[in-house]
Image: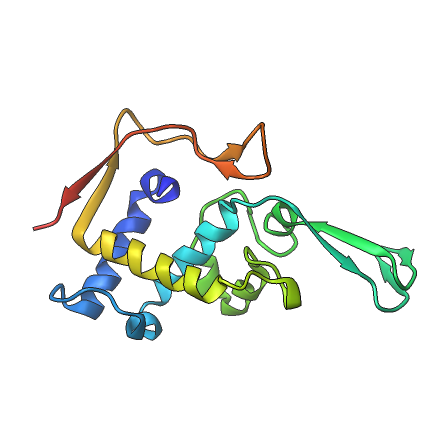
Length: 178
C-alpha cells in the first residue's frame, strides 16, 4: 500500500487495467491473471522493493566453486542476504526506484525476485500467498481509490527488534469508487 500511495499513477494504471478486464461489473478472479500483466508487474515490484523478510538465505555448496573470484570448497555454508539480492543494481537498474514497468520491459527479470526463497526450502505457502495478494489488493483497487493523510507515507524500515521490515504508522483513506 505504501508504494501505491507514494506513486498514485501506478495505482491508477493498475485500476484501469483491472477495470478493462472485469468491465467494472465483477470481482477480479485468478482466471484474470493472464490479462493483467501490469498488475502482476506491480505486485512483483512491491515484493522486490518492499521485501518484508530481510534475512540471509543459507545453502551448502555441493561442489567446489568460485564466487566473485573467491574459492568456495564443497560443503561450505554460503549465505546471500535477500535484501541485497533484490537491490542488486547489476540486475535491477535504479533499484531504489519503484518501477513496475521494469518487469514489462524485461519479463524474465521477475524470476530474480525471490521473496519466498528458492528450492526445497522455499515457502510452502507461496502459491496461496501470491493468489491472496492478487485477489485482495486487486479487488481493493477495483472498489476504492487510496489516499494518505498528511502527505505520502514513509517507506518501510528495518525493525530494530527483529528481521522484518514494516512501514511506520500512517493514516490512509479508502474512497469508494461509484
